[in-house]
Amino acid sequence: MNGFWEDLYETPQKDALVTKRGLRISFSQKELNDFFGKLLEKRPLEYMVGETSFWVLIPSLAAIYSFPILLCITGNPWYTLMSSLGLMISMSLFNQFSYNYNINNYLVKPASNIIPKLLINSLGSIFLYMTGADIWLTALPFIWWFLNDFVPVIYLLTEILLIKAKTLMWNLGDPDGVLRQVGIYWAKKYNLKTGENGKVL
Image 1 (cartoon, rainbow, N blue to C red):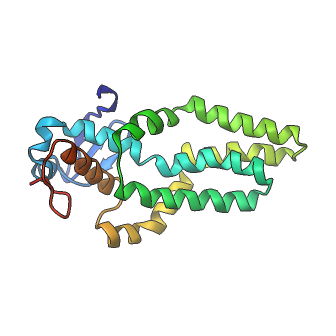
Image 2: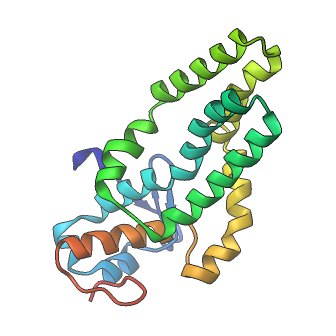
């Protein structure tokens, strides 16, 4: 459980919380204490925010891991780009209405490490090179990885496109909506009742 702990800091305006890694929750400590109530006695907010910080990575991870595989299968960068983007958008909607601790701990968290990302992209590039692909095509998995991970332009663009849909469907965008799902998950685990909006009763 300690691996998910994230220290929380209130913004100067005290209307939001931020973590060291830059995740921003658009609610104050007091608002979240009121929302999650007695759940926080069993599952501290710092753990739940830490879990949120990994679960929100699912869309970009799906894009990063799918891209070299699809490119090796199809050899078509346009088809690969569209498919990877489609998967990313699907996963961005998925992480708003579902949460599972085991998937987060044993799959999402390890997949967010740089080593498996480097491995999958290296293998994809080597395979493309061995099949006689152009040099720019062999570099494409690394370019896509860079644009999704180091300067997350693609993720930000997809979130801008989806923010209206998310606020209409769940009233909250990422990561606030994901944090709500984490709270609902743990409330069920501890047999606590929640309201329609996820507030612990």
